[in-house]
Amino acid sequence: MSYTDELTITGLGAAYARRQIIADLSLAPMQPGQVISLIGPNAAGKTTLLRSIAGLHPTTGSQLLGTRELTHMALADRARLVTYMPQSLPQKVALTVLEGVIGALRASPIDGDSLSEQQLLETALDVIARVGIPQLAMTALDQLSGGQRQLASLAQALVRSPRVLLLDEPISALDLHYQLRVMKLVNALARERGMMVIMVLHDLAIAARWSDRIVVLAQGQVVADGTPAEAITAEVLAHVYRVVARVEPEETGLRIAIDDILTR
Amino acid sequence: MEPAKIRPLAVVKEDALHTPAPATVPDHRDMAAAYRRTIRRRVLILLVMLVVGIAAFALDISTGPSPLALRDVWSGLFDPGSLTPPEVTIIRDVRLPYALMAILVGVSLSLAGAEMQTILNNPLASPFTLGVSSAASFGAALAIVLGLSLPFVPGDWMVPINAFICAFASVLLLEALARSRAAGVEGVVLFGIALVFTFNALVALIQFVASQEALSQLVFWSMGSLGRATWTNLAVLGLVVLVVLPFSMRAANAMTALRLGEDRARSFGIDVQKLRFASLLRISALAATSVAFVGTIGFIGLVGPHIARMLLGEDHRFLLPASMLTGAVIMSLASVASKIMVPGVLLPVGIVTSMIGVPVFLALILRRPDRA
Image 1 (cartoon, helix red, strand yellow):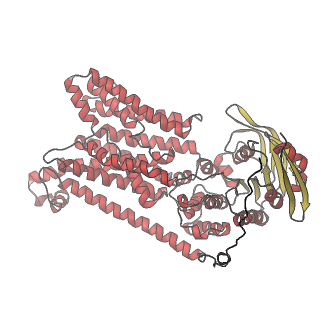
Image 2 (cartoon, one colour):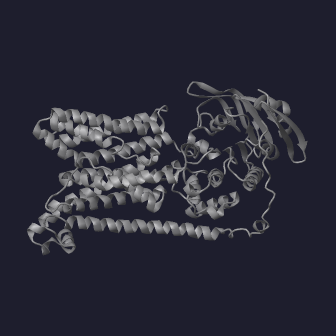
Image 3 (tube, one colour):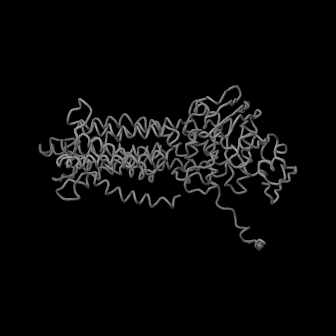
């Protein structure tokens, strides 16, 4: 199965209390099968943008998935299309990794009718194996390390195989092996199923290497949007991060060197 | 100033590099089998708890000023012809309603506590700690001391009706707060604690102006006693449990998902606001009805779910029934203890549950840091 619907965001606005985080933000259509990374400084509105697409935050403007408007869609209907992985997993949860993943499937039906117990179990085990933590399947979530929890959390999002997968800093706590593994996995899922992956990343080199498209946000505005080479330039980095950087294209991504100077 | 030079560690432990990779990765079939074993074990634990509950229930009936053998309890319930009429009366009319009330109150308060802890995401939430019981005491005080109640309520029912109304109102307040986006879950818990203090102060005020007789009646009420069990009360509470239970179980999967975080649960399509609201309605019905009939009984709603969680984890399909069973068992055992702790004296059961509950409560608090 493969998906064909593009996601088009037009004039998006989102506010917390009275503070406007994102105002009138528009993005060119995001394609199914693409891996899109959101980068930018702290408090740029990256998480707010993800949560807005997930329907967790009231928004203005339009979010069109194919011909369907997501903005006013009921949470349950939206959950069939979009899944969001938050930055953290609660600390004290007396569920195993496997139970957490099965719980994600059981929470609401994904394709109309619900799966049998056997299918639930198989689907959950498949995802846990692909994420690379089968040895942790029967371990309680509150006994995992930070990185392991992040992987368990990722498995909970992946198992629903949404059309649009939203990941908020999915690799921030992972070691080198798992960083690479997760980036390869989401790229593979995007190619195999046409899943659209939108994620917040802080590591620019990884974002450049493993994304089809990069959106640079600062103060709720799009500063740059394009291929990694187009979006990550010395000028953009100087503007949003206030650093002096040298960016050179490489065979696999970009070579980014940051000088030891803060410009402001 | 020159930064201190750090001497690079130039030694690579050759042995460590050649340590073989750790244990083999389990395959699907092993994991599936392990999962099924866990499920079977849980069903087994539930069955064991059920048997323990029935045993505690029988023990509760057999204990009292004139001790009866368990065999006589059986006969009294199912074969009354083989016992003397006074024995049958003791078992059927005195001890049975009492013991049934212990079970029903344990089930209600513990189920209410389990749901409350999940939807408010707080291990210390329970009808007792968040002001529901205090509100009920206030309602009872209004009836006992000031004779205030709704019009047309018969005298016998004034205390339970008042207790119910106030308990229900306190949960509605919590609900209203939970629904307003501003407060957040922590706000609800703090508000609940504020309710405890407010109602306690109001009750103290009423006690201050109460007559000697009304005061002793009120104090006795607030100690929580199963002695007020009547068949009518039992039928009402039983009906509440029967009505609420299917809705609780239907929400079990959503509550399990909520344990994975509110944003995540919502992204799975769960309307968390609605879940919370419906759950608080169930909690108020369970807790308010129990407290109305037996008075303040603390800690069952706190301790019951915790024990269930330690035994079975947080898959709510198991946690909810397990909480009801642990509640029933603790309450029955507390009832037994209330009859035998001071020979010849029947202690109010609320005193006993608090005496058991406080140490457990402390243990839970002291256990928290190392799990963080």
